[in-house]
Length: 357
Image 1 (cartoon, rainbow, N blue to C red):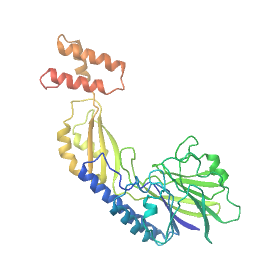
Image 2 (image 1 turned 180 degrees about the vertical axis):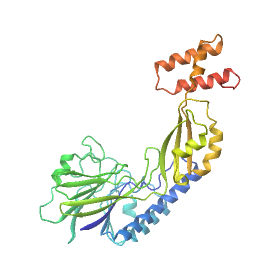
Image 3 (image 1 turned 90 degrees about the horizontal axis):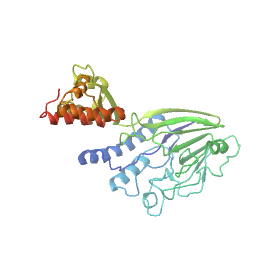
């Protein structure tokens, strides 16, 4: 049995444009700490090899501190490390993969053609992106010999035959004859799944960078032998992104309602709280002032609705009634569009000197 740590899509030196400049700098520094946690996990699990399936870096431009941290962390891993550069950190003569002196235990695939690495315990296949796009399947032409050995592959690509980033069909996976296919590119963990006799998986990214990468993030710990693969997701992230919807209808205390919706680890949470339901307009400034110290990052969004008795005022004579009737007509035409509720709320407040009913 071979013990494997399978990671991908670290995207080191991401810009973190959704955070303040100071927090973005902090987050880029903390990203580098992921590398030490990766090395620690490899030691803890007694890993036989580490497979890193591309996009370790967010682009060709790398801070010197990041390159040094990456080299040091990979060198501290007490087993072979294999890297298949992806579409963000593709291999070129100018890339950090070519220009940096890497530790002896680190093997970087440098060609767009499949490379084979033979060891007594396993055979490993890998290849590199050498440009930002790759239209050919990274599994193209791979049919491993039926020699009874464990056959592994570490590749960057998407299980989508119509894709432009190493498109892979499920038929390609089944035809390969691999025991385990370690993939990168998709940021949501998936797997292991099986096509034919081949298990395959994405570990997802090890730490979220925005609200399109929600929840726990990490790597996969895999135990593999010919014909059998077991994988366990291991959280690695210090921070996580979450979106929480909080219903305000009938809520006596909004602060308590929000805390109940996001009850744990708020200090490590970057959260978007969406207030929904029917009631008076929430005081977002006061809520933010009270809650922000409890979170690493917090955004409050008001999508609440006007109370029904305010809508009934569209029957009134006068400007307020006419305005509410116009907003009501638009709301009825697009009931799922929150714009008209918000426009009615703010417009009525403006008409009545800032006072809302």
